[in-house]
Image (cartoon, rainbow, N blue to C red; front, side, top):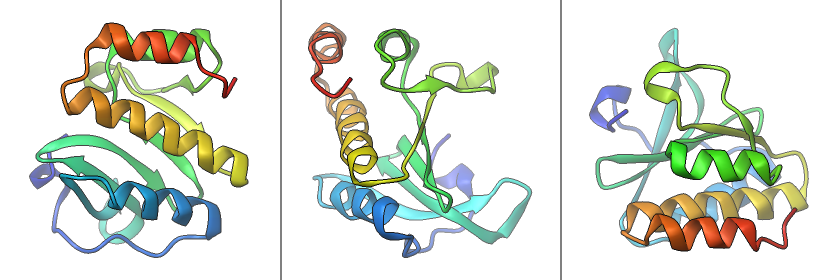
Length: 140
């Protein structure tokens, strides 16, 4: 989903400690736009923080610490096979997405790693290089 499709643009909210650690880290990366993630059913209710590289969605973090990473099938499959993320329950245009839950500092570090991987994809790093990083990950 593009930034414009998400609704009005507002600064990302302050979240609890570990999701906020991830949000702050991502906001430091070149070309990243951070904004409020609105509730799917109520576009006046804050539900987390969205991250974009230009107009392309990187992913978002819900207020409860759930990460929805907007990646591709080429990365989704090795992430699932290496137990680095969980299957996204919604198909269709979101088929390449994965889930991850931030509950502690170790999870926050893994979430940053996952977002970084997807960021590198959007910045033009080859899928082969990224799959190699997944398969050689020391996180799992």
